[in-house]
Amino acid sequence: MINYILKDENAVYHECGFSCDNVLFIKLGSEAFFITDPRYTVEAKESVKNAEVIEAPRDLYIEAKKILKKSSVKKIFFDPKNFTVADFEKLKKTVGVTFKASPNFSQKKRIIKSQEEIELLKIAAKLGSEAFDRYAKYLQNCGAKKSEQYINFEAVRELSSNGKYDLSFHPITAVGENAAKPHAYAGEKLLEVDELLLVDAGLKYKRFCSDRTRTAQFTSKLNFEKVQKFKNLKMQKIYDTVLKAQEASIKAVKPGVKANEIDKVGRDVIEKAGFGEFFVHSTGHGVGLDIHELPVISKKSSMVIEENMVFTIEPGIYLPNEFGVRIEDTIRVTGDGVEIL
Image (cartoon, rainbow, N blue to C red):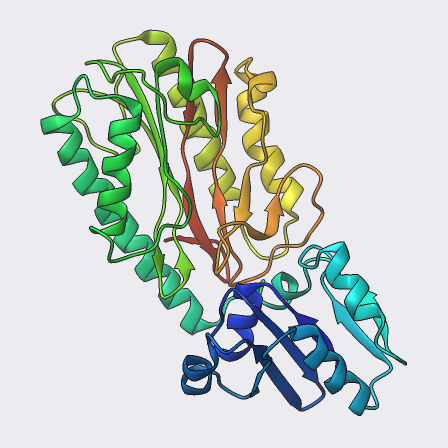
């Protein structure tokens, strides 16, 4: 059995069904230990599954070292992305234990989603889609001449259902030329009739994320369907190109293909249309407990796609100082293709 130590909240949650912002989780063969401080021990003892809860009144690492010293373990894996240099300095002083760095350790373990996880991701996606529909109705009635900052606030309200759900990430609400910035910050630009609007947002259901991007022309009949009409012919051309790229990429997904092959299919569509230099990010990323997980769907990734991986397909074209278009869906890999969540 592999022995390992975890610190990341979602990594720990995946192991035992509970986590908090101050925890160490140690797995040694058939034994598991959830170490936290007195603020969380009551809830941890109620919620943690298949692990012993240990209260550390001072320093979690003191308790962790006690456990490791008592064991006969000689090697233990950890994710160097989740531990600071100071954390690691505390750990490596443990006598007789070799720490083996394994980047993305937990994400690799959970890259293939279970049926239960897929169902939770489906619910998150459905709730996210419903929130997009409510948000569209708000914008139809009240969005005109509101600032990006204001409509961003309303996006948070709709996505969270007035605080019922946590968000996968802070929404992106980009108007006009600001949509040419893939991760634009909301500013003071006003939303005008016939302006291009890009919305990228998601919510969490039982910690599992949804993720979706839509680009549309703002009118009193605004919707976030994938078929969109623009008065501006250049916008229409860019939009249709991105949609074609997304559809081609989705069609290319099936078990056995490599991530970079999926990326190339959509990227080729955009390059053939003459906009290759303006597609500045990868085609997609895994979605689960984290909003960005494995696999990465990029031209650099040779990872082989397997059934029940869940990831986004989100090509985009971004014309500086003009506008940008991105279309994103989260998909599950099936036995012979995809299911759009």
